[in-house]
Image (tube, rainbow, N blue to C red; front, side, top):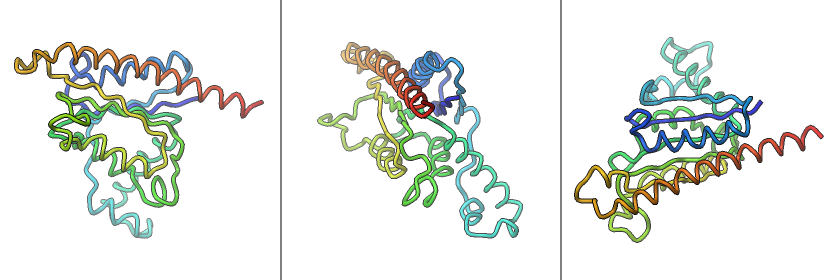
Length: 222
């Protein structure tokens, strides 16, 4: 049975968050191809994870039999999150831009699951897994725009996730604040075009990834 790991990190609820709406479109398209599939949904805003701390860091270099209660708890959580990621056949991540980068809740998740020698580095337990990131933003930080060098969402995630060997793709809904900000009123048509393209890309990507997995599974069984 196929498994999709669905990560949301927007502060805003369904219906008002563009990243949540687009990740949901991906999920629905994936499920249409895998009606018996499993979706594991982590809402990092509603249920934030603890930040990676000294206990979590030191636990990796200490014999489990000698763990302090804090190290034991930190190691157990990290193991849970990593195994959840490793069990996924596909991952979709909502990564809205806040203050030019990703939400701190998403950074906390990444810090927990990014382990050199397991998920990253010379050993890559999630190598080849398709990961789709929905990188929404209120303005535009595309190449050639005035704030191009303020883009620390795609740039950061591409470097980090690529070191895990995943098949990485981005969907980027831009100008999401156009309707709410009078100064951006003339950008509303572009915002609507970007939004529509994001939904179309999410649906197509979710369907394609699910179909590819089904084809691969069928080939393995034959």
